[in-house]
Length: 131
Image (tube, rainbow, N blue to C red; front, side, top):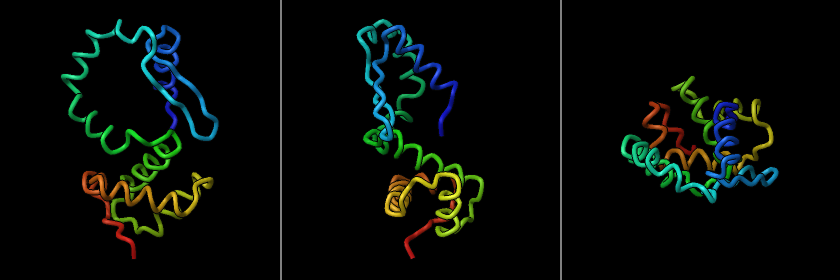
């Protein structure tokens, strides 16, 4: 889901040259290190020490996803966290109510990705195996 606080931080980092941000319409944002990214090295090292392992795992599973794919996955996770025993059919129906632009094949692929990455187990959600 969109978070205005995060977007504010990204805008700030982009304005000072730490990030290079490009918007690609329906595909979302592409965010890369900016020309001045090296100026935050000390902060980066401390942050990585504290959060590096979790970030590495996130990038391993979701680093190749675009903004829309991340939006889909994060919405599925939020729905499942609020309804741990939800069925696959109910999960899809709930998602389609709040995010109707996603196609059935995209939703199924995202569910399988989340199952394969172990996210479902971490949030104690139903297995949601394909029936």
